[in-house]
Image (cartoon, rainbow, N blue to C red; front, side, top):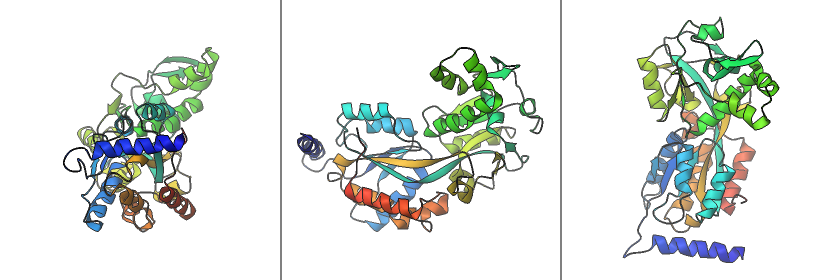
Length: 347
């Protein structure tokens, strides 16, 4: 039955994509994470030069969640082929894909990136802890063992060693995969370190409610959601030099003339500290491929194989030069084998 369903899906894609007097679409369509965007653009441009018989793939941003939502709309020429993501696909997204006929999904984890906190280049040296960011940005914080509406107005209110700036943090909007990593590895950790988690548990909340309360961000203007890409965050900092912004490591490393990065838990973010696991706020990067499009959209198979080649994602490749933390060699070789075999996620 499984073989029949896969064959049927492939025929359905073929029928959709070949309808009309000529092939309706011969250009690979990609959308998703703003963090993955520059890497995908580098590969797409290089692929276009190396494979002149195929048009250069179209790469668009919009955020991980938005890209996966597009990806899960179904099969065929009017749907994208690849979704870029700075987080793993969720079970509910896999379910939505399956219900729309997207049952054969290839997951490609191609490297790592860090989330960094930065001010303008002429700002002070900042040494941050997850606790500082939680106490600055959470909707409620612990005071004398009880949760209260966040009273902190300046960074100095949070930590006497931080500047006497009005709290203004430009953080990823909720549609971005970076936001989820920020919540998990910064806000939740800070909630625990500050005693907030204990206070919430003692108030009688269940585990899920405690987790939700820990990552709930204040809505009084101190935390500003950025729904665009990192260039928008940079523009906000340039308008408010006393602000702090959240960026991907690669964006920071390509804008060191404009930004000064903070340490996190005493560690400066860099490719070596992320590769070693020393820097605490890092994450893997992904893209997801519709396997049923692989033999239908011209060049898609070649593009995916080209993306994971050592030439692209290896330590001496252009993605590492831009800021990607490469996979260890054994992981990279295993990934290439999985791509060659067309390995799909379990539903």
